[in-house]
Amino acid sequence: MTDMQIERQRTVAGVRFNRVGKLYHFDYSEFPELKVADFVIVETARGRQIGQVMAFAEVEGSERDYKTIMRLASPRDLVLRQEFESKEPEALVVCREKAQYVGGYGDVKFMAAQYNYDGSFLTFLFTAENRVNYGRLWTELSKVFPTTKVEMRQIGPRDVAKLLGGYGACGELRCCSTFLTDFSPISIKMAKAQGISLNPSEITGMCGRLRCCLVYEYEQYVEARRTLPKRNKRVGTPFGEGRVVDIHPLQDAVTVQTEEGYRLVMRVDLVPLDELRALAKKAGEPCTKHGDGPCDCGAKPGKAKAEAEDSDSDEE
Image 1: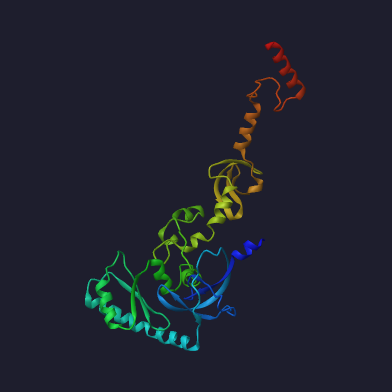
Image 2: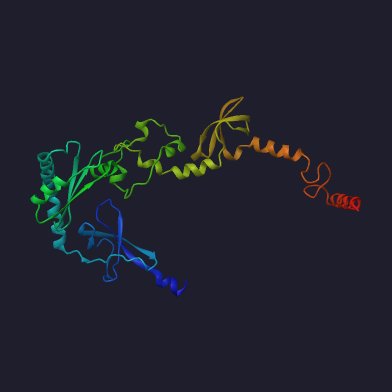
């Protein structure tokens, strides 16, 4: 590694603001003694926040400017955070009452109120099918909380499920509220590749969207299917020739219908009949270069050379 490459490497601190939230990176060069699990105060788009250092990461390039950590959190900061967290349910009740008073928010569900650690910033999270004009409500709430900057933020169904927590259809705690820090794109194609029933109750989560777990093994299924024959393909097996009727990617096997019935056959025991027949047909055809005569793509070199010399003498 060259000196230039070493200079371009930087180490930043990964800070998390919620128990199951994304990591945000900050420059901690002013705090060389910083350790994992330390609480720090940083400036964000939503005001000053208290977060916990989860890890340190090396990043390439010095052109990006990372925000710096303001200071280490003090015991007073932690007490303040706990105090304002206890006020969040009351703030949510006030928000719902004001929404009813203003009117026009019948289809809106107000899910949570979130203070920052010192109470200078208050965010109300809500969900709705369509975009909501919350201008009048924001004005009323700003009057109720005059010393606090109020923000209204609309969230999607997956974020709502993350906030509510609870159990999924599998009987375990929801992935989004236990370890998922970000939501990956999910499509019906993932369910099809894994042979999962497309019944909505089988592939839909409690949030009403496709289940996050559909993406977990998708790449393994795609990779396994590349080496297995498709359905209805004719193959040779130890039990005779048959037709593929089902595929088992994680077993690296297929179910084949033969004259003896249905058999589970591993991939290593399959014979690709279509490919073998195509090769045999090609081998039986005359050479495209020399016709039926000998050639250098399989015939004896001496005969091919003699034929070439004869053709040259005929031209003369």
